[in-house]
Image (tube, rainbow, N blue to C red; front, side, top):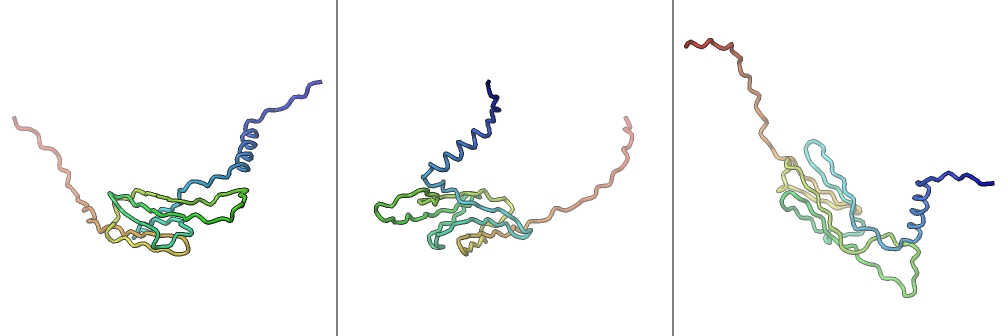
Length: 144
């Protein structure tokens, strides 16, 4: 007697994913997460940089692109230490974000608190467009 087994390709993917997670020992990528938001008066870029001192974080703006650079220093381990999982990333990181053209980058302010850096950009004072009303007239017949 033969048994019918339903093949579930997603189950195979889940099994592979679990196996990969169990054997993966390399650090994760150095992409730091960022939040971009606007409160109406200011545009903000907030980034998670745990373990990075404010003076070890480089914040630059060039051609409307904000770049955050730093380095997570490697920790020293005792000889003979065996890692079962190593997810904390070490080494250099860079994250760049294109800024909107409505901000005043000359007056940007960066603050660092509890492993989070926040860069605040005020919006530029722009001239509000004027609303014009144009009177519509009937066309006059051509006198040819």
